[in-house]
Length: 155
Image (cartoon, rainbow, N blue to C red; front, side):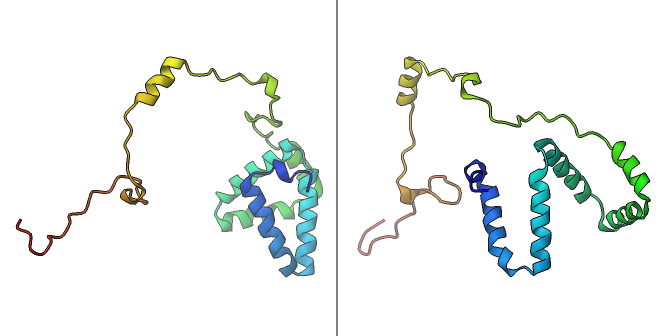
């Protein structure tokens, strides 16, 4: 896993850190189950993982009672029927996302802006606001607050 750490997204890293923090608190049975599932997941190809994610998403859409009934019906099938179902299962849709990163030399280069465009951009008006004059919730300039009248002034 350490060799792959740098390839993980921030969300994946947070998930693994949380998992590692909870692991010692799990019972021996839960730890063994988690380890078994992790080993199975690692053994899957990227296409199989993608199909598993799609299947998981589809089952999340089912009502819990429907899901339970379908699972029990499947478990009651003889092994031959299960094999037939697995053989006739829908193939996952072709993925549009690349499985591997594209080599840098195959990427198109981004053209640099023309000098006249950068000159015009630098001349564009800017809204200057001091940090204390910006509403941090909306990032909009705050209206100057009216100053209370000074004692002895005539307004």
